[in-house]
Length: 108
Ligand SMILES: CC(C)(COP(=O)(O)OP(=O)(O)OC[C@H]1O[C@@H](n2cnc3c(N)ncnc32)[C@H](O)[C@@H]1OP(=O)(O)O)[C@@H](O)C(=O)NCCC(=O)NCCS
Image (tube, rainbow, N blue to C red; front, top):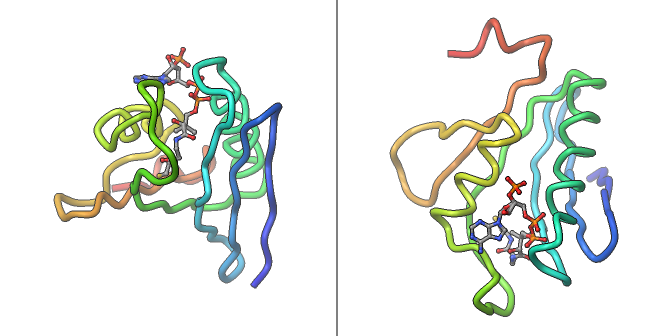
């Protein structure tokens, strides 16, 4: 499967492409937390998705070492929603979807 990694400073994220207009976002990770680096990575990912008309999907699942600066699943949902991700339904784990700007009008 085709992948693309986005990074900024100590933060990175991975897109795995499926089909022509979809990709899954995973491996969102920041080594130096609370400095805005993950936000900058997510801005890059969002810009790329809008420019390429990509629908993005993700599953919220906190992972890795946890310190007081690591986000929990509730905080992660709020974090992703700042970039246009919306909760798909009320099932667990939380599944979120982001439509590119061009398709926002068609989103449910
Ligand atoms: C999620 C993660 C990547 C965020 O990285 P980060 O570098 O700390 O994030 P940033 O510093 O860019 O912060 C982004 C925003 O979230 C907010 N934020 C950061 N940490 C937060 C916390 N613990 N609680 C609430 N909000 C938080 C920031 O205030 C910032 O908001 P703003 O843009 O409105 O100012 C990091 O917690 C991480 O690596 N977690 C472990 C891996 C993981 O669970 N990934 C997600 C899998 S779905």
